[in-house]
Image (tube, rainbow, N blue to C red; front, top):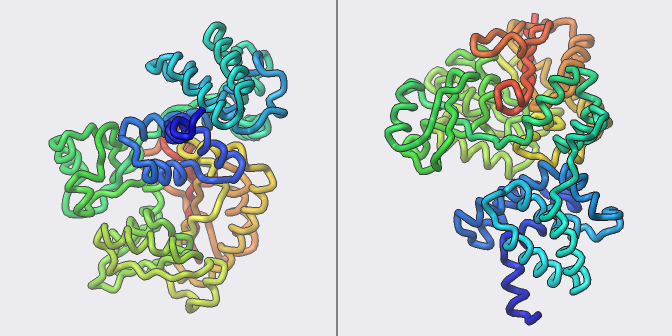
Length: 454
């Protein structure tokens, strides 16, 4: 194969997909960040960018399903080169799940990629495996008799994680949740501006040609099912921002007033920070102090604040939240938010690689980190003030257990049950916390609690 043809193949969507999957699997790269980088560097057309995104996310979401399905034709995948496994996954995914793509196109590219990355013998092997897939399909996971294994393979979720959720929410809910993560995520918007109502914003967006509906979860949320929202005048003017609906529920729990001084102790990238600021008034000295450990993340908060016209109500600091106790005066804040570092299991639909890299020890390690942050900020809250603790995860260790542990050591705090007319009863725990699972509303999974300092 001449160098010109090799170079051409290296810039095809399927070759790029294999390379991205290699980086995600072996180097811990984030799929969303790497995808954006490759799409820009390769100057892909919208059509090719869409196909690349579909393949990468689809293969990550269904990796265990694909491996099980291919196992009829592969003796020992663990002995195969990593790129070869990913090439077979990429090809099988398209042949089985993307019905609009002709098999001959997938087979041709797969063989050519195998030649470039390997040699003629590997190319022949790839062709043989994929011809078997074409003739016989993938091995059927639905015939697995063991329920845990069937859910694990069918939903491509590690068996230990399936068992973890079964123990906490039961097998039926676990199955619903696990398979819901295979559905495509949708974009949700939050109305930032107080100048127009949500109904007016929806009307304007529909007039612009967008397919939008009111969120069933958030009173300021809008679901968008079609159209590039960043081109909308409403978005450009800072009246709307992109934020998951469950995340939109956090800021209102603080019951903010216009003149409050608020601490957002784990603020980046600033979606919740700007929401908090929308309740405040600069003329009445209302302000959010937003913290993050990294300068580049602080820059993101500032950019969001500028676009959404709330810079006059947000002050940012590069600071580890665990050190906040040394940086501010005791009892100086009216409300404190801790959107704590967590395992992020509530984001598995958007970031499917999360489910393969986390382990049970991570939950306990993060629990300890969360307690350190809560301990640090607790003395900074005024008496009568609210401490709002939230995560985008689903584990007991990082959610209920973190709150209970904190309360055991801080008798001056008490739980305030959260109320919402938008959420179903199933989203409220017995203690008055909010626990949203990804299959409940199609949103990210989220946990929210509120405590008051007596």
